[in-house]
Image 1 (cartoon, one colour):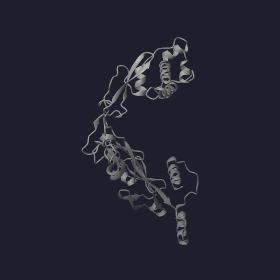
Image 2 (image 1 turned 60 degrees about the vertical axis):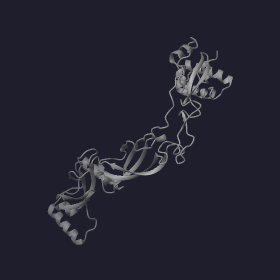
Image 3 (image 1 turned 135 degrees about the vertical axis):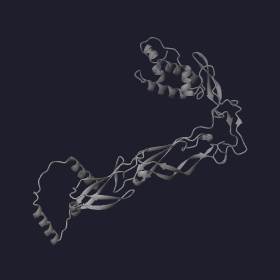
Image 4 (image 1 turned 30 degrees about the vertical axis):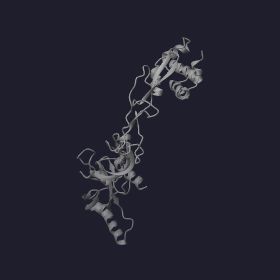
Length: 366
């Protein structure tokens, strides 16, 4: 008797997946539906028997140890897996419906940072399959109907017998005449070519929630493609990308920005009106403020996703030292230095937070 490994064309160290692939390849080549010759039929029996043995771990172990060739196991399951058969007994499953669920669709939408604060409503255009307006998913020309297949009698399946080592095996296969539907469309709809759907660009309104970030996905049930034969719609997934803003960035639901303050305002203090993303905001700069200090404006950040609470607006101070001074201005600064008698430049205690802010600003500018 032929060696099972040679029959399948695999080595004795072949993995279960390699054995399955080898069987599938040979079965597609030798199955009676594809190759009706007597030689192919005999080879198909041997290939099937070899796969029965080697696909079962216990039988394969006994075979490798010389303990017999193993028996046919799960013959009906093999036909079910690879050829859609019903196994022994010729069980029928009936015709399949032309109406199937449509595919899911996904689009990507760019949003501005200011739109993320409270959320926004946006019209977006999608290109998907929609219900055919002529046949309304029936797939036939108006006034006509599908007719019962005269090959399978409307069952959508036909029986075939396959000879094996164990006698004749009856299997069920989709009817080749009606493709398993049980009916034939003699007059397909001209608009959709009998598919029940057409592709179309359509505009939908999307409620973009507040607090989203790049990569956030929104699922709209039933917003995807209509199925073949007028089947139910799939879902539409919308993936967002929050665009870069030159002035503001975000840290969670907090908004971050930098405020430049003159040397004199930093010394004496000042009031400032700044244009935030959602309107003006009043900021008080206290006298003696240092570069790297952060002024926090509560509740002027981003409203959280599925929340009514907003983050904060955090403004990092950058004290700007003038690079050009008139002679008079220099004299005044010298007088101030004489009056204050400040210490000369020296090394101070390392401040992680301050250094981190300056470092981050440097890289943003670079």
